Amino acid sequence: QEKVQQSPESLIVPEGAMVSLNCSFSDSASQSIWWYQQHPGKGPKALISIFSNGNKKEGRLTVYLNRASLHVSLHIKDSQPSDSAVYLCAALNTEGADRLTFGKGTQLIIQP
Amino acid sequence: NAGVIQTPRHKVTGKGQEATLWCEPISGHSAVFWYRQTIVQGLEFLTYFRNQAPIDDSGMPKERFSAQMPNQSHSTLKIQSTQPQDSAVYLCASSLVWGASSYEQYFGPGTRLTVL
Image 1 (cartoon, rainbow over the protein chains, first blue to last red):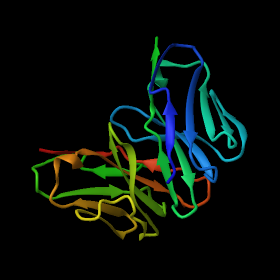
Image 2 (image 1 turned 135 degrees about the vertical axis):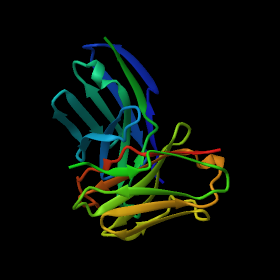
Image 3 (image 1 turned 30 degrees about the vertical axis):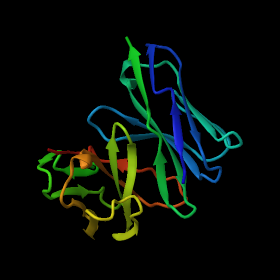
Image 4 (image 1 turned 120 degrees about the vertical axis):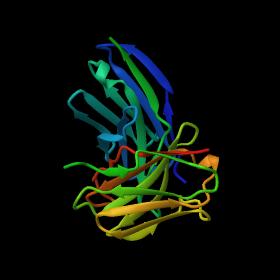
């Protein structure tokens, strides 16, 4: 069964700093990796996904996927206080189980 | 577009009582998912439907949990004989299509269930 682990558990950075979040997954057959953002009292919201080895940039977000090392990272440039939230990494594996498996998340706090 | 709607937002039950949670997916979305979220376990998959048909319920505790999707506009999650360990936020999500594709899941705000 797919396992997804995230680090760090929590992170506090000053406004404007670059944020780097890490995620490892157990199954190299994972079709895609998703990053979700969750604010208190709200459901998760999809931010960005990646399917191919390499990187993908959308606005202030860049995600890197390395299938050989089973690792993916999310980088947030020029962080804002509104970026404060829990960030969830999720792996999609469609072999036998057509579902997303989530990590436990990283709590990010951006200090003004 | 109101997004995924979940009702009630909060529910308190006594041990042994039944709880029914409702979800209205985004109109036109063919896949509906149920998850449970706790501090300890994180976000756990429970079950999902595609075009109203149950596809995978492998995450559901078998004895007391059941889910249905009687029509394309709503799904229910029923928990019989609730126990304190069932206390969690139950999240519903929908997706335009699902499978080996890039379509994202849209989550509702969740129902916080507290079992006393």
